Length: 237
Figure 1 (cartoon, helix red, strand yellow):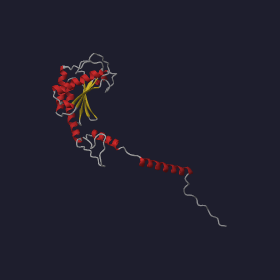
Figure 2: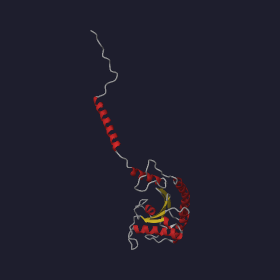
Figure 3: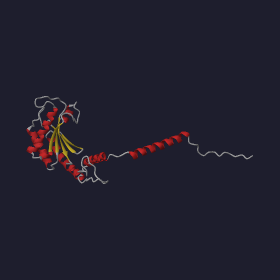
């Protein structure tokens, strides 16, 4: 009677549950592929996002109007304005450094930062206006005029923003900080337009009251920083 030795298995068999698990993963993969094949991409939303990105990086326009889609697969997105935007920032940065030094010599705090499409110049208003007033000090008019003359050479759109701290105000002229901040922004804008001769169509004013603080209003230093006028210089007009 012949005896046969059973060959020893080199690798153990996979557990039974692994087969079921593999089948499940295959089915899930097939399911998601099916969902993807049935889905549609919103081209309108895609182009809206693209338009925002182009604008942020200095492009001038895309080839479609709001609410419409371009024909064909190619999207013509001109970016020729990107590098001029960078150059403008470099030039303006030098000018703003000069302005910052001059204002500092006069005891006025200022700073600048780039946010989105704006090169934002921040100037404390304690030397511009009396407390609770939008009447400019005579010396403040000279400071604003000097700032305007340096920016006028670039003739870029500027939005003048008024900001206050959170100290409440309630007078006949200014029932709240909203009115006070707007009145101060307009007072500065008038120097730009009437005295400096900045193009009227490139100026605008807005008052934010105490809604956009840049420092803690619980400290005197923070409240000082929040009492400010900001010049939003639009690098991509």
